[in-house]
Image (cartoon, rainbow, N blue to C red; front, top):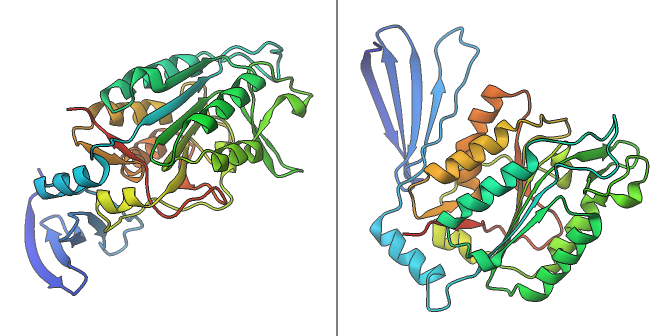
Length: 314
Protein backbone atom coordinates (compact mmCIF):
# COMPACT_ATOMS: atom_id res chain seq x y z
CA UNK A 1 0.00 0.00 0.00
CA UNK A 2 1.26 3.47 -0.85
CA UNK A 3 0.79 5.91 2.00
CA UNK A 4 1.17 9.64 1.34
CA UNK A 5 2.50 12.09 3.82
CA UNK A 6 1.40 15.46 2.51
CA UNK A 7 3.90 18.24 2.31
CA UNK A 8 1.00 20.39 1.25
CA UNK A 9 2.06 23.42 -0.67
CA UNK A 10 -0.98 24.96 -2.30
CA UNK A 11 -1.06 27.99 -4.56
CA UNK A 12 -3.96 29.65 -6.32
CA UNK A 13 -3.95 32.29 -9.02
CA UNK A 14 -6.33 34.38 -11.05
CA UNK A 15 -6.75 31.56 -13.57
CA UNK A 16 -8.71 29.52 -11.01
CA UNK A 17 -5.97 26.90 -10.74
CA UNK A 18 -4.66 25.42 -7.50
CA UNK A 19 -1.24 23.76 -7.38
CA UNK A 20 -0.62 21.06 -4.76
CA UNK A 21 2.78 19.51 -4.04
CA UNK A 22 3.02 16.28 -2.06
CA UNK A 23 5.64 13.68 -1.19
CA UNK A 24 4.94 10.04 -0.32
CA UNK A 25 6.64 7.99 2.39
CA UNK A 26 8.49 6.19 -0.40
CA UNK A 27 10.08 9.39 -1.60
CA UNK A 28 7.86 9.99 -4.62
CA UNK A 29 7.31 13.66 -5.29
CA UNK A 30 4.38 14.94 -7.34
CA UNK A 31 2.66 18.15 -8.31
CA UNK A 32 -1.07 18.36 -9.05
CA UNK A 33 -2.49 21.31 -11.00
CA UNK A 34 -6.26 21.43 -10.51
CA UNK A 35 -8.51 23.79 -12.44
CA UNK A 36 -11.14 24.84 -9.92
CA UNK A 37 -13.53 25.83 -12.66
CA UNK A 38 -13.48 22.68 -14.79
CA UNK A 39 -12.23 20.06 -12.33
CA UNK A 40 -9.47 19.00 -14.73
CA UNK A 41 -6.23 17.80 -13.13
CA UNK A 42 -2.69 17.31 -14.41
CA UNK A 43 -0.30 15.19 -12.30
CA UNK A 44 3.45 15.58 -12.80
CA UNK A 45 6.14 13.36 -11.25
CA UNK A 46 8.98 15.52 -9.92
CA UNK A 47 10.98 12.84 -8.12
CA UNK A 48 14.75 13.45 -8.52
CA UNK A 49 16.38 11.25 -11.18
CA UNK A 50 12.98 10.30 -12.53
CA UNK A 51 12.75 10.17 -16.30
CA UNK A 52 8.99 9.87 -16.40
CA UNK A 53 6.17 12.35 -16.42
CA UNK A 54 2.53 11.33 -16.31
CA UNK A 55 -0.37 13.43 -17.50
CA UNK A 56 -3.67 12.30 -16.07
CA UNK A 57 -6.81 14.06 -17.15
CA UNK A 58 -9.89 14.07 -14.95
CA UNK A 59 -12.99 15.03 -16.86
CA UNK A 60 -15.10 17.64 -15.09
CA UNK A 61 -18.47 16.63 -13.76
CA UNK A 62 -21.39 18.24 -15.52
CA UNK A 63 -23.54 20.01 -12.93
CA UNK A 64 -27.29 20.49 -13.01
CA UNK A 65 -26.76 24.15 -13.87
CA UNK A 66 -24.51 23.18 -16.76
CA UNK A 67 -27.07 20.61 -17.93
CA UNK A 68 -29.67 23.34 -17.93
CA UNK A 69 -27.48 25.70 -19.95
CA UNK A 70 -26.63 22.97 -22.44
CA UNK A 71 -30.26 21.97 -22.80
CA UNK A 72 -31.15 25.54 -23.70
CA UNK A 73 -28.31 25.65 -26.23
CA UNK A 74 -28.66 22.27 -27.96
CA UNK A 75 -31.81 20.74 -26.51
CA UNK A 76 -34.30 23.40 -27.47
CA UNK A 77 -37.56 22.88 -29.33
CA UNK A 78 -35.61 22.10 -32.49
CA UNK A 79 -33.36 19.33 -31.14
CA UNK A 80 -30.42 18.80 -33.51
CA UNK A 81 -30.53 15.81 -35.81
CA UNK A 82 -27.60 13.41 -35.58
CA UNK A 83 -26.63 11.59 -38.75
CA UNK A 84 -24.06 8.80 -39.01
CA UNK A 85 -22.29 7.26 -42.00
CA UNK A 86 -20.72 3.98 -40.88
CA UNK A 87 -18.36 2.28 -43.36
CA UNK A 88 -16.72 -1.10 -42.93
CA UNK A 89 -14.64 -2.79 -45.65
CA UNK A 90 -13.52 -6.35 -44.96
CA UNK A 91 -13.85 -7.99 -48.38
CA UNK A 92 -11.98 -6.80 -51.47
CA UNK A 93 -13.05 -7.76 -54.98
CA UNK A 94 -9.46 -7.74 -56.24
CA UNK A 95 -7.72 -9.10 -53.15
CA UNK A 96 -4.15 -10.34 -53.48
CA UNK A 97 -0.96 -10.43 -51.41
CA UNK A 98 -0.87 -6.62 -51.42
CA UNK A 99 -4.56 -6.16 -50.65
CA UNK A 100 -5.76 -8.89 -48.32
CA UNK A 101 -9.25 -9.32 -46.95
CA UNK A 102 -9.74 -8.19 -43.35
CA UNK A 103 -11.70 -9.82 -40.55
CA UNK A 104 -12.66 -6.95 -38.25
CA UNK A 105 -13.78 -3.77 -40.09
CA UNK A 106 -17.37 -4.82 -40.84
CA UNK A 107 -17.79 -6.35 -37.37
CA UNK A 108 -16.43 -3.18 -35.75
CA UNK A 109 -18.71 -0.99 -37.85
CA UNK A 110 -21.72 -3.07 -36.79
CA UNK A 111 -20.68 -2.81 -33.14
CA UNK A 112 -20.38 0.97 -33.36
CA UNK A 113 -23.77 1.24 -35.03
CA UNK A 114 -25.27 -0.67 -32.10
CA UNK A 115 -23.49 1.56 -29.56
CA UNK A 116 -24.76 4.75 -31.20
CA UNK A 117 -28.30 3.70 -30.33
CA UNK A 118 -27.47 4.72 -26.76
CA UNK A 119 -27.02 8.27 -28.07
CA UNK A 120 -29.28 10.55 -30.09
CA UNK A 121 -28.69 8.80 -33.42
CA UNK A 122 -32.06 7.62 -34.68
CA UNK A 123 -32.00 4.46 -36.79
CA UNK A 124 -33.39 6.19 -39.89
CA UNK A 125 -30.46 8.64 -39.82
CA UNK A 126 -27.76 5.98 -39.65
CA UNK A 127 -26.38 4.79 -43.00
CA UNK A 128 -24.36 1.57 -42.88
CA UNK A 129 -22.19 0.71 -45.88
CA UNK A 130 -20.96 -2.88 -45.78
CA UNK A 131 -18.04 -3.46 -48.16
CA UNK A 132 -18.98 -0.45 -50.35
CA UNK A 133 -17.41 0.46 -53.67
CA UNK A 134 -15.86 3.85 -54.30
CA UNK A 135 -19.00 5.05 -56.06
CA UNK A 136 -21.17 3.79 -53.16
CA UNK A 137 -19.24 6.02 -50.74
CA UNK A 138 -19.29 9.07 -53.01
CA UNK A 139 -22.98 8.73 -53.83
CA UNK A 140 -23.83 8.45 -50.12
CA UNK A 141 -21.80 11.56 -49.31
CA UNK A 142 -23.64 13.41 -52.07
CA UNK A 143 -27.01 12.34 -50.64
CA UNK A 144 -25.98 13.52 -47.18
CA UNK A 145 -24.77 16.85 -48.53
CA UNK A 146 -28.26 17.50 -49.87
CA UNK A 147 -30.03 16.30 -46.73
CA UNK A 148 -28.02 17.65 -43.80
CA UNK A 149 -28.82 21.18 -42.62
CA UNK A 150 -26.72 23.74 -40.74
CA UNK A 151 -28.25 22.72 -37.41
CA UNK A 152 -27.54 19.00 -37.92
CA UNK A 153 -24.51 16.93 -36.92
CA UNK A 154 -22.67 14.20 -38.81
CA UNK A 155 -20.45 11.34 -37.66
CA UNK A 156 -18.41 9.50 -40.31
CA UNK A 157 -16.67 6.24 -39.38
CA UNK A 158 -14.40 4.25 -41.70
CA UNK A 159 -12.67 0.95 -41.01
CA UNK A 160 -10.69 -0.79 -43.73
CA UNK A 161 -7.46 -0.55 -45.69
CA UNK A 162 -5.67 2.75 -46.13
CA UNK A 163 -2.61 3.77 -48.11
CA UNK A 164 -0.08 6.59 -48.01
CA UNK A 165 1.59 7.68 -51.25
CA UNK A 166 4.96 9.03 -50.14
CA UNK A 167 5.72 10.58 -53.54
CA UNK A 168 2.43 12.43 -53.90
CA UNK A 169 2.06 13.00 -50.14
CA UNK A 170 -1.56 11.86 -50.32
CA UNK A 171 -3.49 9.39 -48.19
CA UNK A 172 -6.27 7.12 -49.44
CA UNK A 173 -9.13 4.93 -48.32
CA UNK A 174 -9.38 1.65 -50.23
CA UNK A 175 -13.02 0.70 -50.92
CA UNK A 176 -14.09 -2.83 -51.81
CA UNK A 177 -13.51 -2.38 -55.56
CA UNK A 178 -10.03 -0.90 -55.10
CA UNK A 179 -7.29 -2.33 -57.30
CA UNK A 180 -3.86 -2.08 -55.77
CA UNK A 181 -2.23 -0.93 -59.01
CA UNK A 182 -4.96 1.62 -59.92
CA UNK A 183 -5.20 4.70 -57.69
CA UNK A 184 -8.22 5.85 -59.69
CA UNK A 185 -10.19 3.17 -57.81
CA UNK A 186 -9.16 4.58 -54.42
CA UNK A 187 -10.70 7.47 -52.46
CA UNK A 188 -8.17 10.16 -51.64
CA UNK A 189 -8.22 12.22 -48.46
CA UNK A 190 -8.37 15.36 -50.58
CA UNK A 191 -11.63 14.13 -52.17
CA UNK A 192 -12.98 13.25 -48.74
CA UNK A 193 -12.11 16.69 -47.37
CA UNK A 194 -13.92 18.34 -50.28
CA UNK A 195 -17.09 16.43 -49.43
CA UNK A 196 -16.76 17.20 -45.72
CA UNK A 197 -16.36 20.90 -46.54
CA UNK A 198 -19.44 20.72 -48.77
CA UNK A 199 -21.69 19.17 -46.13
CA UNK A 200 -23.05 22.20 -44.25
CA UNK A 201 -23.51 20.53 -40.88
CA UNK A 202 -23.09 22.23 -37.52
CA UNK A 203 -20.52 19.63 -36.48
CA UNK A 204 -18.81 16.85 -38.40
CA UNK A 205 -16.62 14.24 -36.72
CA UNK A 206 -14.56 11.83 -38.79
CA UNK A 207 -13.26 8.67 -37.09
CA UNK A 208 -10.87 6.58 -39.19
CA UNK A 209 -9.57 3.17 -38.18
CA UNK A 210 -7.21 2.45 -41.06
CA UNK A 211 -3.55 2.39 -41.98
CA UNK A 212 -2.19 5.89 -42.60
CA UNK A 213 -5.39 7.46 -41.30
CA UNK A 214 -3.42 10.35 -39.83
CA UNK A 215 -2.76 11.70 -43.31
CA UNK A 216 -6.21 13.37 -43.21
CA UNK A 217 -4.64 16.18 -41.19
CA UNK A 218 -2.81 19.08 -42.71
CA UNK A 219 -1.70 19.82 -39.17
CA UNK A 220 -2.39 17.95 -35.95
CA UNK A 221 -3.26 19.12 -32.48
CA UNK A 222 -2.94 17.21 -29.26
CA UNK A 223 -6.21 17.03 -27.41
CA UNK A 224 -5.81 19.15 -24.31
CA UNK A 225 -7.85 20.68 -21.54
CA UNK A 226 -10.47 23.26 -22.28
CA UNK A 227 -12.13 25.78 -20.00
CA UNK A 228 -15.13 26.04 -22.32
CA UNK A 229 -18.40 24.57 -21.18
CA UNK A 230 -20.30 22.14 -23.36
CA UNK A 231 -22.75 24.78 -24.54
CA UNK A 232 -19.94 27.11 -25.64
CA UNK A 233 -18.02 24.54 -27.64
CA UNK A 234 -21.24 23.33 -29.25
CA UNK A 235 -22.14 26.85 -30.36
CA UNK A 236 -19.10 27.07 -32.65
CA UNK A 237 -18.99 24.93 -35.80
CA UNK A 238 -16.43 22.12 -35.91
CA UNK A 239 -14.78 19.73 -38.37
CA UNK A 240 -12.68 17.33 -36.29
CA UNK A 241 -11.10 13.92 -36.87
CA UNK A 242 -9.59 11.18 -34.76
CA UNK A 243 -7.63 8.31 -36.23
CA UNK A 244 -6.14 5.05 -35.02
CA UNK A 245 -2.59 6.01 -35.98
CA UNK A 246 -0.43 8.56 -37.72
CA UNK A 247 1.45 7.61 -40.89
CA UNK A 248 2.02 4.01 -39.89
CA UNK A 249 0.29 0.70 -40.41
CA UNK A 250 -2.26 -0.43 -37.86
CA UNK A 251 -3.33 -4.03 -37.13
CA UNK A 252 -6.57 -5.69 -38.23
CA UNK A 253 -7.34 -6.40 -34.56
CA UNK A 254 -7.82 -2.77 -33.60
CA UNK A 255 -7.14 -1.70 -30.03
CA UNK A 256 -8.13 1.81 -31.07
CA UNK A 257 -11.65 0.68 -31.91
CA UNK A 258 -11.83 -1.57 -28.85
CA UNK A 259 -11.22 1.36 -26.50
CA UNK A 260 -13.26 3.81 -28.59
CA UNK A 261 -16.33 1.61 -28.39
CA UNK A 262 -15.70 0.71 -24.76
CA UNK A 263 -15.54 4.37 -23.72
CA UNK A 264 -18.78 5.14 -25.55
CA UNK A 265 -20.53 2.14 -23.98
CA UNK A 266 -19.30 2.87 -20.45
CA UNK A 267 -19.82 6.64 -20.59
CA UNK A 268 -22.41 7.68 -18.02
CA UNK A 269 -22.45 11.43 -18.67
CA UNK A 270 -25.13 13.02 -20.79
CA UNK A 271 -22.75 15.18 -22.82
CA UNK A 272 -19.45 13.85 -24.14
CA UNK A 273 -17.27 15.90 -26.50
CA UNK A 274 -15.07 14.24 -29.09
CA UNK A 275 -12.04 15.75 -27.35
CA UNK A 276 -13.01 14.15 -24.04
CA UNK A 277 -13.63 10.85 -25.82
CA UNK A 278 -10.17 10.96 -27.39
CA UNK A 279 -8.50 11.90 -24.10
CA UNK A 280 -10.17 8.94 -22.41
CA UNK A 281 -8.81 6.36 -24.87
CA UNK A 282 -5.40 7.84 -25.77
CA UNK A 283 -3.30 6.33 -22.97
CA UNK A 284 -4.99 2.95 -23.25
CA UNK A 285 -4.13 2.75 -26.96
CA UNK A 286 -0.48 3.81 -26.70
CA UNK A 287 0.06 1.53 -23.68
CA UNK A 288 -1.19 -1.51 -25.57
CA UNK A 289 -0.08 -0.93 -29.17
CA UNK A 290 2.84 0.54 -31.11
CA UNK A 291 0.65 3.17 -32.77
CA UNK A 292 -0.19 6.69 -31.64
CA UNK A 293 -3.79 7.81 -32.20
CA UNK A 294 -4.28 11.30 -33.59
CA UNK A 295 -6.87 14.02 -33.03
CA UNK A 296 -7.21 17.40 -34.66
CA UNK A 297 -8.88 19.82 -37.04
CA UNK A 298 -9.58 18.86 -40.64
CA UNK A 299 -8.09 21.95 -42.20
CA UNK A 300 -9.94 24.11 -44.74
CA UNK A 301 -13.33 22.49 -44.14
CA UNK A 302 -15.05 25.15 -42.00
CA UNK A 303 -13.92 24.43 -38.43
CA UNK A 304 -14.52 27.39 -36.09
CA UNK A 305 -13.14 25.92 -32.88
CA UNK A 306 -16.19 24.06 -31.57
CA UNK A 307 -16.59 20.36 -30.95
CA UNK A 308 -18.86 17.43 -31.72
CA UNK A 309 -20.97 16.47 -28.69
CA UNK A 310 -22.33 12.97 -28.14
CA UNK A 311 -25.64 13.25 -26.26
CA UNK A 312 -26.57 10.13 -24.35
CA UNK A 313 -30.21 9.12 -24.18
CA UNK A 314 -31.77 9.20 -20.73
